[in-house]
Length: 388
Image 1 (cartoon, rainbow, N blue to C red):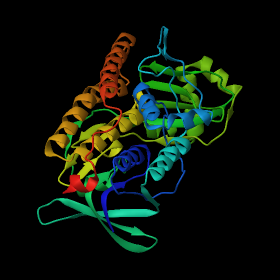
Image 2 (cartoon, rainbow, N blue to C red):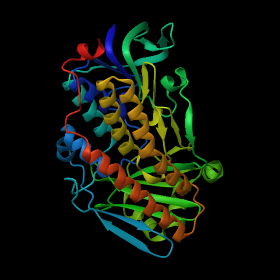
Image 3 (cartoon, rainbow, N blue to C red):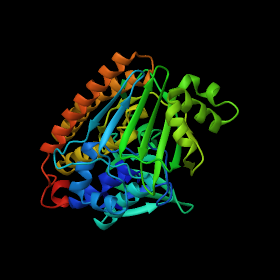
């Protein structure tokens, strides 16, 4: 098989990248080792930039029509005070959303398919093919028990935190974090609210995020080094104990709610930024840039970089990929550094409040860049002309 681009990983970063490339005229193959419509651990929260992009891509109306509740404010709960920030209408965005991944990823894959992407699940990629000059020219994979060799002008790794593509191309880390939090996630029905709510106390943090079907994602974080001790014996009991430690009042609210899914956990991983492109390959999403879940900004990052990368691929020049690298690093490095400091969970109230102000300033910078992008990605008249 020969395609213009093969994208490995059909979650939000990969599906968005594939969709945008196909809309630019490329022949795109999107593969994933999993199954269509499955869930994954997530804080779900979309920030303003992600909502803007989903609206531009024509996906937001389906998210709204599926009953995803609009988020009208964000509340930060510190040790001695609470601060609520209203979501002001700006850049055409008047509310935020936090769709379940079973909805968001599926809608993006559907949009990619409608844009002409060849979507295939159950494909396990185990190698990147290179030519005699060290340029990536495709992938090797197993599909339905059969070996497949797929040739492509570019290989895009969107296959997550432990990316096979990133490992195969030996993408170097250019920024590394110092801290990591472990996270326990639960879903509850009966918690009313239309806001993102974050609690921060020294050594522990928590988030409450309304999502689909009347459910709210409630997650609690501790330093990864404490995770094993905190969860020894019974994960559900540890989850409840930590929530009571952070907010006894909120813990009482949970008594009147119903937990509708088992508690699930993530042991944590230090943040990093890897080189995002090389000869014949590129990385997007967690494959190339991962931040601790403490700031719930991962999906927004994934959408941003999907659009920046798709535009670079469509231009197809060395300068375009250099611009992708520079812009991505410029928008990501400070976000990662501030998130890393928050993930230390070793601050005073004034210190973490200062970190939140710094993070907000970086999101505003990111938002200005996204708002200035042309509505339609620059492209050659045809992909064939570009490739030649």
